[in-house]
Length: 314
Ligand SMILES: NC(=O)C1=CN([C@@H]2O[C@H](COP(=O)(O)OP(=O)(O)OC[C@H]3O[C@@H](n4cnc5c(N)ncnc54)[C@H](O)[C@@H]3O)[C@@H](O)[C@H]2O)C=CC1
Ligand SMILES: CC(=O)C(=O)O
Image (tube, rainbow, N blue to C red):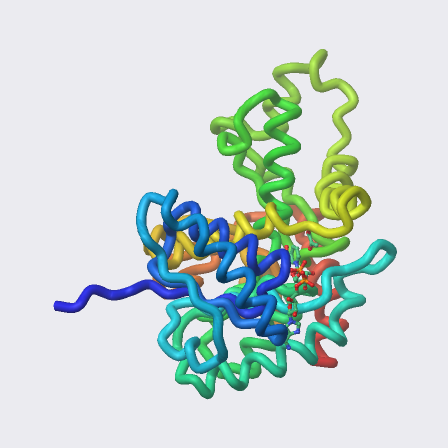
């Protein structure tokens, strides 16, 4: 029997797209990578550069550059085309241009016979994922935005540093918009099985003055701090996207906060936003419903409300 060749198509071979390809390649996460870009020369150049390292990888991975026809048999199409926000802009400010770009992409991908999973990275990621879901006609499980996966990783790194443990021993989620209105349900944060409140209570001297609002602020600002120094961000999101792709291709059923359509979960409907979800072969297998306190619910709804204000214009 012929073995399945896992194929990831990346639309937008800019900094995020090419870094995602590099991450997939160096981790050996798929068999084939296709790069598509409006700037065909750029995609071709990235393909050539990526191919140059193949001799030093654990195995051969096919890297190509081309048009949308090659998306038909892809397992995953990753959309990273779009203008990164500039200093002084919010991600929401890039909606107009990103929307136009994404609309020129989804039709040709679907026309190629694509029936796999869209992973949306382009900002504002929640709204672009919602638009792709609407345009593609695919089931909601098959359209995933990276959502607050990156913010949650940033939060875990902050908390791990504060407590002095590996961030992977911290369980914490940023929820809502991948943007300024995101929130953190502190009642659900645990470190090695202890709630964060217990960690603070058991070490009063050490954690005196820890300000939860400040930690949320620093999580939200993390991207801007990078942008201030190097103009844009790409390695963090590329590794995050590759992590989600790994969950899908390897059917890991790992829980990651991604942007997905809410249909009553968390008391919200009709909006894509970041919530923990089980990610496996079919995409979003299940949304994990975290019990939130009343105050946390209010903050979550406020974030959804920000997004809803834009959904009607999609
Ligand atoms: N979700 C997240 O956490 C993050 C999202 N991003 C987003 O990723 C996107 C890409 O950022 P960068 O790679 O830094 O930008 P970039 O400018 O380096 O690359 C964008 C690429 O898209 C291509 N492109 C533009 N219009 C196209 C079209 N109609 N069809 C095909 N390709 C097209 C461009 O030619 C360019 O190569 C932005 O929307 C940015 O905000 C960036 C970091 C984190
Ligand atoms: C640019 C962006 O969305 C981020 O780094 O969070």
